[in-house]
View 1 (tube, rainbow, N blue to C red):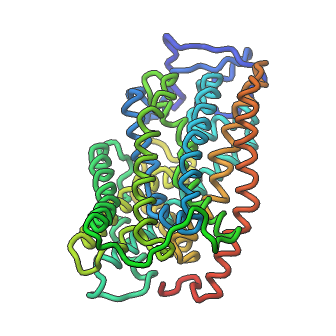
View 2 (cartoon, rainbow, N blue to C red):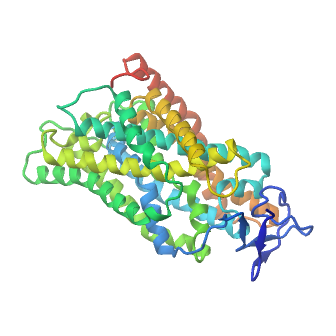
Amino acid sequence: MPLQINVSNAKRTEYSGMDRSAHDLWMLGAPDGRCVDEIQVRAGSGVLQPLRRSSWYSTAFIQLIDIIGSGVLTLGTALAQIGWLGVLIMICMLPLNIYAGLLLSAARNIYPCALSYGDMASFTFGKQFRRGVSFMVSAIIICGLGCYLEAAAMALDMIFSGAIEICRPYWCIIALGLILPLAQIQSLDGLRYLCILDAVLFLAAVFIPVLFMVCSFSQGENPAGIETHFVNPNMTWIDFFSGFSKITFSYIGAYIYLEMMAEMKVPEDFPKTFFISGPFQLLIYLSASCVSYAYKGAEIGDDLIISILPREGIMYKLSSIFLLVHMIMAYLVKGVIVTKTIYIKVFPKERGKLSKAKWFLCTVIVAILTFILSNAIPIFNDLVSLIGSTLVPWLGFLFPVLFLLKAKKNVGLTSSIFEVVCCSVLISIGIVLFFVGTAANSIKIVEGYSGGNVPFSCT
């Protein structure tokens, strides 16, 4: 069935230097190279163009739900590795990540048809660059699913601690047994309100132990002999970059900002979202990390924040259940994205309604990949740090800068001195974190293997 394209009342913007064959769904290959925005492209019965329904303030809360995830569970450990200096790093990372979002918004204003990182890569650098960027986006989603699966397995272990003692890989299999039936949902449109409930439960899972620690402080019951430092006196360069990577991982969200803009009524209002999401994000991160570090100091180790609660208490079990529900929901939301990507790659000739059997096969493929990943690096904190140093520098710092600068070059625009300085800071952080941070986290993982934390072990 031929594509039916409705371009009535479409906004047209003239661009130069554009790869016109980059994305045939969003680029009309007219001789004059015009990019048509606000179009609806229909293939069969599926509407591929996102509907613009979201306001800027609702998009802000979507940001919070999507970005604040498993990373917040490790921020206490990040402070234990670095010291209170980590708080300053955490505060400084917020405006840097906001600025990366502003760069993407500016690039999107030049190329309104760019609905994703892959689209923007095509319009700015070409089809070959698109493939690499799309691969990295899929990779960070797969890695995120691995984090969710590992955290879900840890939650199950905490829920049944004292009653059932089995190895972590078996808990991962049980968690996948809970996830796979739900993963057969091919669209999450009907789960919007459930996602809001999930966000509330996750915040409860985090703030129950925070409130427990605050109450312990007020009653003078905090553990004796706990020491904290502005700079950890025992910190090595490996510890610093491991903690730094955890902080950067907790902020990553830039790779989905273009999708968020694509669903907004007025995409140009996207910068306003940070007035809501930014302060809330920083408040949650500082509350969870500072209270944990003040309560446990360097003794936090690699434990999740929930592990601070007394294991025999109801709060421990309740927080663990909330964490499990959140990780399953987070897996489903991100899992649909990567499952659809695999489905399209494996079954490119499929049209109309997705085959349930083939969809199930794709969900199994995703489950196997996440199972291998989560157990290949059995320490949750190490997995988070590795992602924070390998993929986050590119997706969160380098690509936003490259996209805007190349987009401006394509249309003959120049950058201000302020923009050049800010972009230079992002590039410098991204390069250092990628090379030095990846080396540090790789060494830490290898040291963990030597210490007995081998792949698929009972940790």
